[in-house]
Each structure stands twice: as C-alpha cells, then as structure tokens.
Image (cartoon, rainbow, N blue to C red; front, side):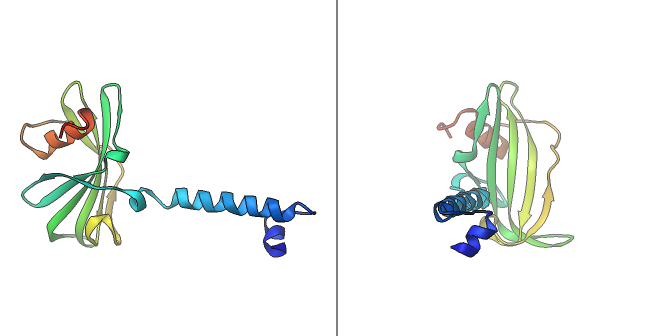
Length: 151
C-alpha cells in the first residue's frame, strides 16, 4: 500500500486507511464515468419502416412542459455514411409537451447494433422544431416523454 499511499499523497500511520478511502473514491468516480451506455435499459417503443425504436425510461426527463427522451434505433440493414457503415443510432429528443413539437438534441451513429461499436457520426447541435404527427415515431417519442407509462 505504501506505493499507492505515496502516489495519493498520504503520509503517516493513517495512510493505509486514507489510501483505501481515496482508492474507493477513485473507483466510484470511474464507475460513474463509464457512461450511460453501460447502464441503459432499452424498452421497445415502435417499429418504423427501416428500424425498431427503443427508449430508455431511466433517462427520460420531464420538467414543466419540456421533456427529453433517449432513444436507440436498431436498423434492419446497415447504412452508409462518409466515414463508414452504421447499424444503430442514439438520439436525445427534446419535446415541447404543450405545443406538440419535438427536435433532435443529440444524434450519434454506431458501427454495431444496440449503440455499440465505433461511433461513425455525431451531431451535438439542436435541430429545428417539428410538429408531432399522429401515428409516427414522433408521436411515440411524445408519449414516452410527456405521458410516461402510457405508451
């Protein structure tokens, strides 16, 4: 423990206990930083023509009349982009519950299924607001974010 104790800046008789406490803190921070992908619990949302859509209710948030929803799209066939082929994508959608509008807040594509593998493309800029249309993916996103438990 003395090497780790020195590395962590510990000294004296309480070094072993302090070092263990510091290591525990480091480990907890690393676990927290692993990312939401490691703990995502994707629930089926809707089948579209080209992909099945899933939502992670644990990361769906509604504040007032606004909601944010994380989704996973699992494509039936690979798609091409400049920098490679992708089989899945993740979207964070932002929804105006009171005016039935939505937009893409974050978008990323991945070389493997289930949002895994190498990121092929990422867009972190909010898109334009669009109307929620009945019977579409946008309506399913609206229900997941603004009416949780009813989809």
